[in-house]
Image (cartoon, rainbow, N blue to C red; front, side, top):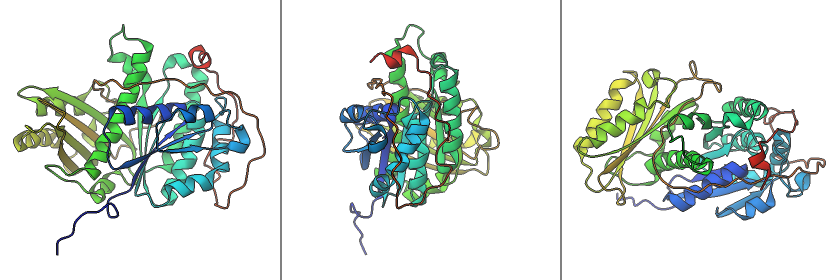
Length: 377
């Protein structure tokens, strides 16, 4: 019997940007990446910042707690805001097969609310993947410590945790690059990571991967390494694969990976021989017994260029939140802006009809020190 795919039997994927950094990231994805088959959701405590989101769904959390004025950089307020709005979050995540959560760790809303949102998604049965950032060193010790605490809390709430250390970007970018351009590189990584994984599931390609394949690699996988390589020319596939698996930004070798998911994207001229060469190279540098899933898709806009994204899992014995995966960067031009969050007015938290794990957020409501550039706008 011939069965034609319909919208009802495709995996339902939602991408949630939490807080200012997460909202900026999904704006970049919408503006600069053609990520088809996903629903974008912006979540924030700051009503004004949320109004600038380009996501089709915008959720203001903690409305009673913060009065729409943001978390003031307090992760405790971010957590309480998400707990106040747990029914609203539950409503918009119900029925999802896969949920991406992206945010900047170290601030208030993202750090505090992301673990709550992740816990709800995973409790609903969705494959839950977080792609988050750690602050630059100049953002201060307290902000960095808050980020590390947030990562420790987020880790058990997700199936896969990918961490982008902003500071490592300084090792690979031009020293004359502006601060704004450096932040654009961060959004570039988040966008490329989400697109590569979602593309495997939603797009028909030369080598197809279904949702069950992706789930076999990413379900309960813990921390993951992600490398992105791009190359052109006669040896483009092999060169892109080398960049992806041996980038100087990869802190830990992928040799010990027990699960590997990689996606090859190229133009209409990409050949099966090139795909095979890239696959063989990646297969040769991981554990011989690793579960390897790969896909290959065509992007008509890519000419003489191949992009390869590698996601390696099974590293929890060697990776911690203080030793985070490093990410290779490709060149695109996303946009970035920083949204300030005024201090909230604290009110009693509204109770939800849904039970919450007491470990969804930190009890520490200490306000974070913000660098001046984050307070001026």
